[in-house]
Image (cartoon, rainbow, N blue to C red; front, side):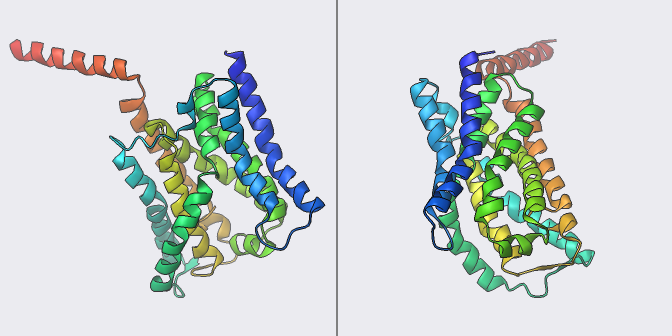
Length: 297
């Protein structure tokens, strides 16, 4: 294994996990008004800044950050990224309504569309920092270390979840937590960590199939603008005790569907895009030669 890559990965994970606690300490030393704070800003931007700094000082590959859009040949993945959360959420709502676990009687489409549309741009900017350094840069380093896919999902998901711990334990309001899942902060943090591990499959596979973090940013932007307001602002109601099963944010049924989507992308990548371009070209040419020989016979 490349020792410099291992060193960079360990340093990156160390800074990422500590970044939120550094932000919380900053806010504790210099008390801030309620709402967003400089400490949250430190927590949000430090992972990406760390990835950039490591790449700069180690003379690494800037493509690992994944900030090339690579739109050519990948439009379908951008479209899929925009549709995953709406389609899965609609599926969960149908299941929930059929089982009487979810009450959609209070849902009002027009104000929800206005709210969703208005939230997209803000969440797009935030989500440039929330995750790409993990499912982009960190994934690229773990691939270089020849980790198998399961180990990559688990590592990135755990680091993503641990990075969020200060957010759930310190920054996030108690009312928002209770609106999603009526449990203690500690329990919610554990559920959220498991959610990040499940989500990581989709985000990582979108990055690997496109070599770009932008589909993941689109995916996350739509989730933040669609699913969180749906639950937190009360557009739907979830039967008490059914949240862990059917919540559109982190219910078990929901997470199983997201893992299935991620594994579906992985299956495609391994079939069609998993081999290097030169090997893919050679495989195609060999297939054409074999077809020509069959025709001649």
